[in-house]
Image 1 (tube, rainbow, N blue to C red):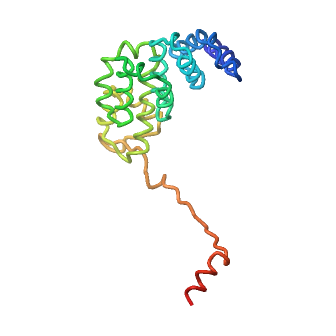
Image 2 (cartoon, helix red, strand yellow; image 1 turned 90 degrees about the vertical axis):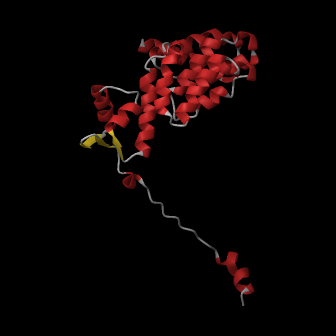
Image 3 (tube, rainbow, N blue to C red; image 1 turned 30 degrees about the vertical axis):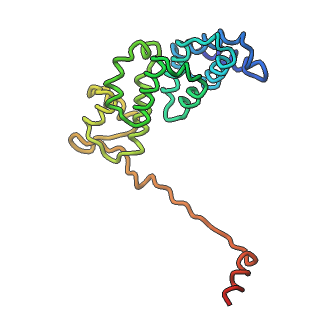
Length: 219
C-alpha cells in the first residue's frame, strides 16, 4: 500500500505542473488521491488545494464528501494552518452545509484548546472520522505539541483526560514517545520551560552622520 501511495503522489505531482493543474479532467484522479490519503494515512496539501481550486472553477463537479475528507485531513496536520487554507477555497454556500459546519466546529475546539470538549463531541462525528485512518492519534500528536509548549508539570489524570481519557497503558506509550516522566505520584514532568527560552543578542550600529544633526541641535 505504501508503494501505491508513493506512485500516486508521483503521478499527481506531474499533473500539478504548470497549466495542467487547472485541467478539469484531473478532478477524478485527485478525488481518488484524497480517498487514498484518508485510507492510508498519507497527506498531500498541495494536491488537496489544487482539487478545491478546481471545484471553484468547475462548481458542477463539487463533491461534498471529498471536501469533508480534505478538511478532516487538514485537521490532522494541526498546528499548521492547512485547515484555514482549505476553508478559504470553499464558497459561502458550501460552508453552509451541516457537515462542513460540524468540521469547522471541531477545528474551533482544537484551536481554542478545548480538548476535553473535543473528545466529548467526537463520538457524534463517527460518520466523518471513521474514513480517516489514525485520526484520533493525529489529533493526540497536536495536543501533545500544545502540552509540550505550555506545561512544566501536569497531573497524570489531567494528561490522560486531555488525550481522550486514554487508559494507563496507552498513556505510558505517549509519555515515552515525548520523553515525559512521572516524577512523583500522579505528577508528570513535561519540560523545564526556562531551559527552552533562547536569548538573542541584538547589536545595533549607529553611524555618526545619522546623529550629527541631533548633536548639533543640542548645543
